[in-house]
Every structure is written in structure tokens, then in C-alpha cells.
Image 1 (cartoon, helix red, strand yellow):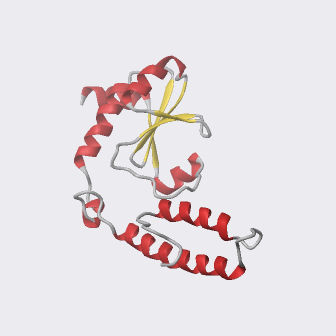
Image 2: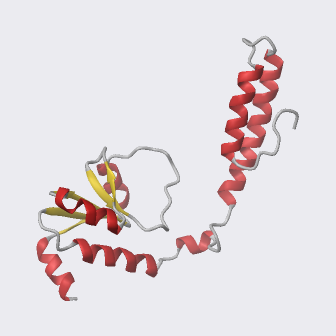
Length: 167
């Protein structure tokens, strides 16, 4: 490679690309159209290589096949958190996929929710919890309705909370 040096991640590639464009852009005294075209060509090649490497990597000791299997430990963690918030008064609990979403009168439970690992989604006006096994792979913003449509959802109702506590 003529322009890019020691690029190991997509983030490093993007950073170097921006710096190179600042330096070699045709509007700059040292820049030229040919250099910019060469930089773009190298960027495209490296981007595809790094993207393929990223898409095909294994996550820790888990393989892609393992990611498809049901993880009972993650399920247990979700159940533990759900049992702890189920007694909160005046809140609505919704399970969407492998996430727990909470809204309603949550202000008085703010500290407890943070302690349990919940985070506030300001655009959705809800608290959410998910285990560390889940990693969002896109930067796409989805509404709560889109998320419900994609993963399915279940509201935890007061009658169900009594059954869950007894179980």
C-alpha cells in the first residue's frame, strides 16, 4: 500500500483516510486529483478486506454456530433482573426479544434501575436492560414499534407477576 500504513481495524482505516484526504485533496496546495483517486482505490480495497475479516471473526471462544444456540445462562440473568423489578409499583414492564423495557412511574426507582444495569433510552422514554451477550451490529435507529415488530413483545401484567413470584 502506498498511502495507508499498519491498518488493523475499520476505525483505524477511517481515521487514516480522513487525514489523507485532508492532506492530498485537490483543493490543497500539495494535493492532486490522481492522489485522491489512488487513496480512494486503496481505501476501497482495505475496507473490503477488513470488513470481511470483521464479519467472519469468532466472538471470543464462541463460534457462529454457538451464537445460534439458546443460551440458558443469559435467560437466567434476564429472569433474575425481571424478578427484582417486578415488585415496582406503577411501572409497565415489557419483554421485547431478549430485552426488558420499563416505563411508567420510574422516577422513584431510578437508582435501583441503574444498579441493576438498566439504561435510559431518551428517544423512547423508557429504561432498557439486556445481557452482555447481545451486541447491536448496526447504527440504525429503530422506534420501539419497529423493535416490537421485529422481535415480538410481551407485557408483564400484574396477574402474571403474582404467578411469577410463586413459581
